[in-house]
Length: 287
RNA sequence: GGUGUCGUAGCUCAGGUGGUAGAGCAAUGGACUGAAAAUCCAUGUGUCGCCGGUUCAACUCCUGCCGACACCA
Image (cartoon, rainbow, N blue to C red; front, side, top):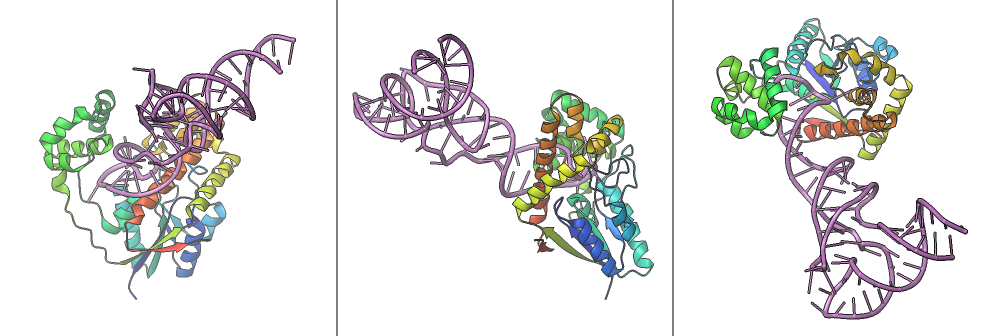
């Protein structure tokens, strides 16, 4: 048999951690995490990082290795994870287990991202400033001029997308769309996707319960200690932003907790929407 | 017991000189090429509390009843 990457995916709180540890032990593989938030060392309770015991049972990668103070991205993850995967295969592994719920990151590993230039932080900052003060519409003329193709194809009301496209056009002097190859990257290993799922009602009640447990475990204190970092993009994370607004006096603690549950449910729903269109996923219902 | 206000979508509430109703949130569906736990888009039929009356027509006006709240006893 050839080299194979098994990706265990599924909505938040479905039960990926336990499942992937078992799968990894069986395959003699470490667990390669594919989670855009568990990668940050500052957060642990709110991101449901694996427990110490779980981490001790199998070698994990990309768990709490980076700082929220440093921008991380799907592109960065693609590079980092691919090189790790290559080296693990080179050291004799035949099957590797990856797990996580970050759809875009998983996609980057499976299909690759095109090589699109990134704007520097000051360019992005100025575009973002214009976005928030004058609205998306104010960015349209520039995008239309620099990249009519993208202008015609993206959701123009999505400010983040417009800024991203515009920033690529400006730094490169070429249209954002010209960087898109329109074909998937080739990987020299097989990919098998296993999707974990549960009946929606049950998933939602697991989410609600997990948030209560997080609060018991001290999420409030953790969030308070992270207040100094709140401006970093990585802190735009469910479980923290709601508590930040509680600290600001914008809502009661109960309201903040309810909002965490709600936003987590919304997140799970978006994850399912993303994966629903992927026919290559082998779904397993956990009961 | 009396008086008053209210009773409209899962929730909070709009509305109409009488022509069977609409917002926010929730919920559901969707998008997604370096912020992705982010960001964005779409979808609103519900005995307008119940029974009767007036009317061509009542959720809207009127009688009564039930329920909630407030005040007075």
